Amino acid sequence: MQISSRLSIAIHILACIETFKDEHKVTSDFLAGSVHVNPVVIRRLLSQLKAAGIVDVARGTGGAGIVKPLQEITMLDIYRAVDCVENGELFHFHEDPNPECPVGRNIHAVLDGRLDRVQQAMENEMQRITMAEIIAETKELIRSQA
Image (cartoon, rainbow, N blue to C red; front, top):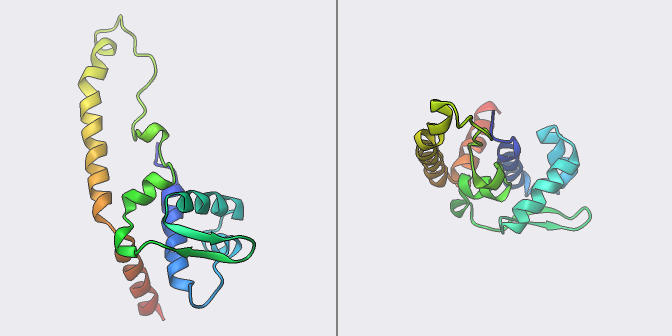
């Protein structure tokens, strides 16, 4: 299983908004062309990013803009904004381990804390990565390819 692609798409959206803000009206159609998804997917994610206070979206063909400083937007902020996992839990434990089996009866006790620690480690690392870093590296790659 993988984390939903909503995280990578949302980061792609923010990188496009910042990269093209002075050259293009950054609309959902424009963003969909870069991401290669339906504009409805983009609009849904923009709505979630707006609710999280990360972007503002002008109605109609007004376009989108980032409203929070890039240094203050972390990968974790985006991850949480676009609901990448159900109920905030990265790992979904299988529903009904057999209580008659000695492993089934004890597997939650063995794994629950470990899975929580793995998720916490991932979230701690995501908290360290800012959109400023991601966009700076993206722009550097674009420059080096020109």
